[in-house]
Image 1 (spheres, rainbow, N blue to C red):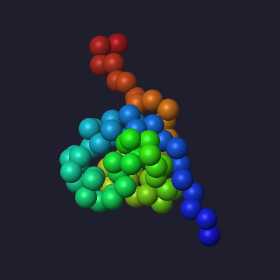
Image 2 (image 1 turned 30 degrees about the horizontal axis):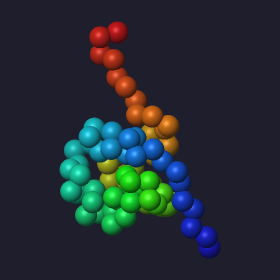
Image 3 (image 1 turned 135 degrees about the vertical axis):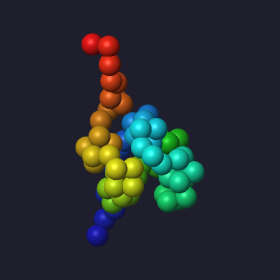
Image 4 (image 1 turned 180 degrees about the horizontal axis):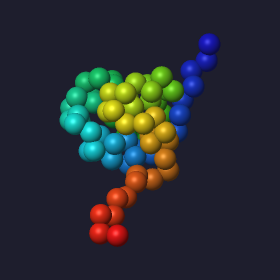
Length: 75
């Protein structure tokens, strides 16, 4: 079986982490190739991205966005 890698925007991953109750250190410990994802050296696999969404408690689809969601509370 082949490995399916998913191109993701590192800004979206970092935004999801900042909105979660997880620390960057927690994510780095859980996902050994995390720094490569953030530096665009390696894309996460589909399974890693699924695990990340569960770990951060964010919808899987959020991690597939091209840019982080900006919330305007003054609209």
